[in-house]
Length: 559
Ligand SMILES: Cc1cc2nc3c(=O)[nH]c(=O)nc-3n(C[C@H](O)[C@H](O)[C@H](O)COP(=O)(O)OP(=O)(O)OC[C@H]3O[C@@H](n4cnc5c(N)ncnc54)[C@H](O)[C@@H]3O)c2cc1C
Image (cartoon, rainbow, N blue to C red):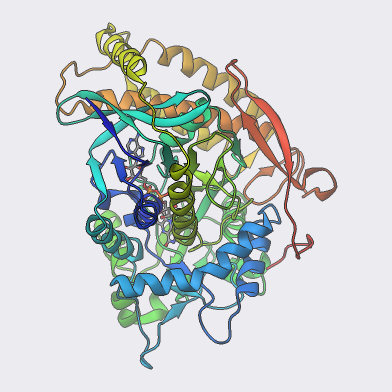
């Protein structure tokens, strides 16, 4: 069945719902397409908080500078300035919508310290901040009359005359494919964490939007910048929020030493994530780890702080490792967490493809550059979600509706039919996905080198050939998650290839990209973004875009 709207938003996380709300406020007829119920989006897993320079002793300039320094000077400073300037009003608006942020004993909004920040500016709701924001936003979009296509899975963007005019989506409960037409599409489909194993990301974070937009002609930028979080739980890779260190937790090696004093003597445990993750990896490599981990020690914080401000991670360590962090330290290690790069957009979310916008983790404005500061991602989703929603509502006013797309629907039907009918070849989608993700962690993780990256690229090419023959175990129509899993694997393969190609291009070390043969940052040659554009051939076109510098010249980065 075909349906028409002004603006279609792909994704119901914080970026998607914030964009939808603003587009609806701008007078557009808006619908959201989401593969899971909105409040199951990965934004709901965000624990620690959201940054803004709200307090009297803080300033947006200080927030912007910390962000630029944290990015290892790769972020575009015009975009960072906008984010830091608009953060306070966006957070206060959320409070007015009904989010009950933590307040201190004086009744004022309480804040906690986060890594790489020169003072405490992270606002929070316990350690369930993302969930609190998401639930409130869901209420707001329902009130604003936004239509939600819930448990609908986008399989392809609808392109017409070089512009994006909607998408094809699979209604999971019936197995029916639909053509959804619109004058503009905002891709807000979240990150690609499952490309790595282990990862802190939910199983649904499979990079769908990067691949869909890239194949539709929108360039990807900063893809080599993959963040490893310093404190993921041993074994499972679950996140132990940075807020633990923000509240004062220590990182210890096997000798019981607070080793960060040798890597970041001023900020200690609250250095930026790339710095802290590398410090842990060095300790482990030099034999001062404990079974490949270091320890996160919260004991001195006492039960009150742990149970009131960090209840979720207390429960996770207890459930998964049987460790009560009130009494014992918890083994942690660096694990894949976030993709700084993404679909290249301007500060209003517009890509170079007419009618195609992007916001949230899938987008690259770029405010995170080489390394994102903790609690700046929720902020990015809200500020640039809102801005893309506003810009798209304006755009649709001067854009005519499409009446085409039936041929795309037919070709998508044929493609999925062929997929379902393929004979079993011995490769399982889950097996291939695991192989891919383990390989990415090993060869395209915290440390990279030329030979490893070349091997990774060859491996991806092999996986792509196997993928072209992969069969779907479930042949049914109703809730065919096996089919969804295979489609997601295709998206992940595109994302993996993009990361490897961008990493091969950048011959220096900056932020999260540590190239062991080029260990230093090289501003003379590499103060620029790596951009990948799909031109239809097997290999993308690789180009460079200068970093926008407004007021902060690159300096040596120490914490
Ligand atoms: C465990 C964890 C903790 C975090 N903690 C913090 C924190 O404290 N502070 C902070 O600033 N950041 C944090 N982050 C990062 C931050 O939460 C995310 O970057 C951010 O929430 C992403 O939001 P989003 O709206 O871009 O995407 P998401 O919230 O991931 O939403 C993506 C949406 O896209 C939809 N979608 C995707 N593909 C398709 C498809 N093919 N068809 C239909 N729908 C699709 C999904 O259904 C979903 O609704 C954390 C991340 C993790 C994983």
